[in-house]
Image (tube, rainbow, N blue to C red; front, side):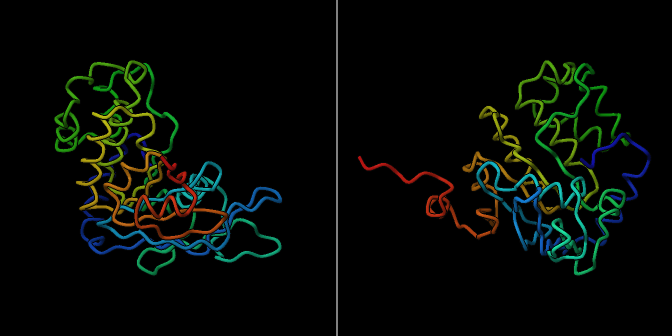
Length: 257
């Protein structure tokens, strides 16, 4: 996921990435994946620049989460960037046109990933969880003084609503030094108050990072994303808004009254 207990590296990496990542671009090329004889997608290409949010839509099973996991490196892939008779998992990843080896994405902190599933210790209080990942005073203050955190810091993740837990997770990931973030369904099953807080946080966060996110709560994504794409039938297509999502078959056509 990219979020690991503190090992004394975050501050140095934050400075390094801030200095060199002003105009960074993450390029995904020739992404190809199959499971057995079933092809999920083939030769997909996508770019995310620092300073923008890119939304990725697609029906269940279209390969959205698979693509995010391949980019992050937790799902097998090669960096050869082409499909062959003997290779069904390929993806070429570059940062400003320089190739990134799959094994270096996580240790070099290029990309952080927030999956759908829970990862915070269920029975530990939020106020004790945060220092596991960050120890510098500036970051701790930024998290603990964020809106509504004072109301939940003495509770455990098991005691939080889905929206509260996801908000805390996003606050943690947002403070990582990684220049790019992958978010898998950050708005799913979240109440309006926390959906709005997450929208505000991500809009602010894109000033310093590039964000690729996917979610079925499409209106939230359309409000904050700079560009949007639809993953359908193994191919990726640019979409400009709700109407394009309907024309692409992602949303049902409006009923005649």
